[in-house]
Image 1: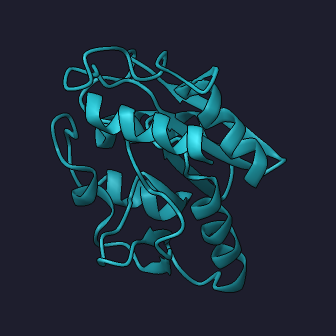
Image 2: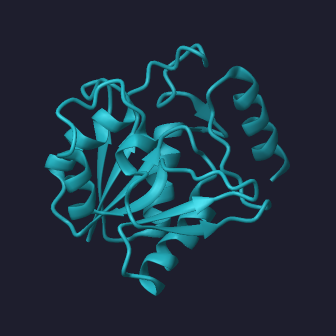
Length: 178
């Protein structure tokens, strides 16, 4: 069993609507996130961190950790509708390279996608205890000191996150062409 935290609490101000409820190819982004996790981990326990978890992704994950009981915690932002292939690689790397604190996809430009990753629960809890208040702090400040396995993701795998109407348009074009 692995606990998974779906980050669904953002205001969607740049997008102009609630991200979790945004439809894409007949399903909401929240439904797609759940399906993504189910396709990667059939023993997943999914926790949706919605508006009841304010203060940004770092604060939400720190608060959400109290709901987790497994040795590993997966994190997926609700606005990453094509993350399944990346998470398959991350999940595999976790098994092949177990002596780490985090398994994080890295795109061809070297950018880590912290919000589409798997973390060792104990390491994440230790990092969370290092600061009294996580509200407004970046997610990278929570996890960047962890012993990470960078999981290379080739350009055929989309780590698109939907932040703006243009991002949503690109996602809709991808689903219509895919």
